[in-house]
Length: 65
Image 1 (cartoon, rainbow, N blue to C red):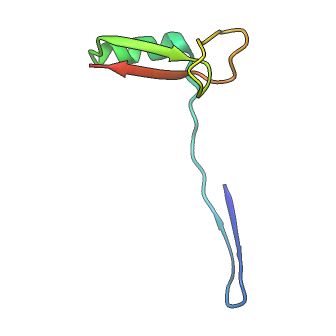
Image 2: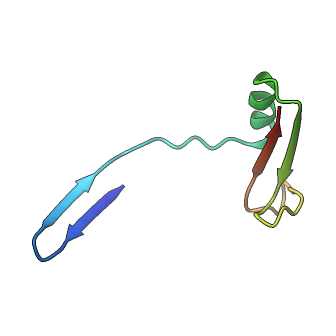
């Protein structure tokens, strides 16, 4: 990630790096169940449409204890 700062009084550049791990639904199922959540709902968007592996652009998990 690059952060360029340019104002009247400051000119700076900062660099940070980080790892992102993409997890698929099966992986989340395993992790969430190991954490002893009792119910998991999956949605494909922020309007709570059902998750579809082929067409959903997001995977949103809602877990209940």
